[in-house]
Length: 396
Image (tube, rainbow, N blue to C red; front, side, top):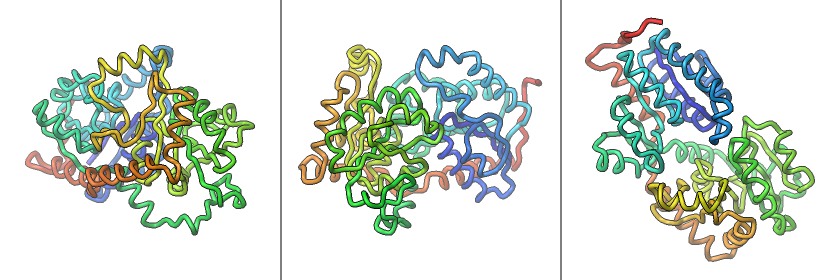
């Protein structure tokens, strides 16, 4: 079978690469063509574009790069039609991917599968019309999405398990912090007796610029008792981090986020998958997310967002397990105060750890990539026959 996959950022690259690996287990003749990153490239196939050419965040950056974004989208659509895959598999990144789905559905009979469903329960719920029209099968990794899609919108989906839970569990099963001795790339073995406060400031430049300075300022008073270690995003060069951490005593480590969390006492984390990873490692955290025009954004959050929380931890638990400092509540003083509350010996720390147990229970132990790959290959090998050729309605 021929699979065309699209992932528009680092987390999508990770999840899509794991799905590719699982697809090869079920389909020994699997061929891949994709927009993605280095992890997907390691699984084989042909990379059409790197996700770095797509990943722009915020109104102004998107506007400035609009010609490039539209050009990449146009090339991707034409490339799919020319290659004629047996399936198109989209991973998150809805602004780009839903446009691709619409094009593929309108001009071909190629099935469109969406792995890591768009988070329309938080924002732009009207997109359900596009999903119903253009997506053949939707694969969810968040259990609370099932009632949202099936009961509220009458659209059946597959909850296949949560890959982050599986990945963290797999890492912890073969990892020993005592054997590692906190030998991180920039680590000082002599300082390894200190606890660690981890900083996870996002994977995009704008996120880092908005959040990291306040995070660093908030942890200054704790640096006598703790090492402060920043998890570097793979797509961000060291020089960019240097402009923020130079002279502060903050260490930066690359390709060691899981090792860092496994050894950390507490963490400051931006929203996203990182909040869930931190919870699954059992590290108490403060969720920090600075926004432009804080009071306006706070108003919009109260009146336009469809959910009470922004962190996956709280959304999965359906309760406030972790403190979210967002928009008008984001400040150095608030971050510092909440960090102090979750350090060892504080009641809030123990309460948060109990909340993490409920998150783990709700996620379950299913293997998401394996389940999704089994379902996808089963669908493609059904009554219509194997290696079904996509009939293109528009020649290029």
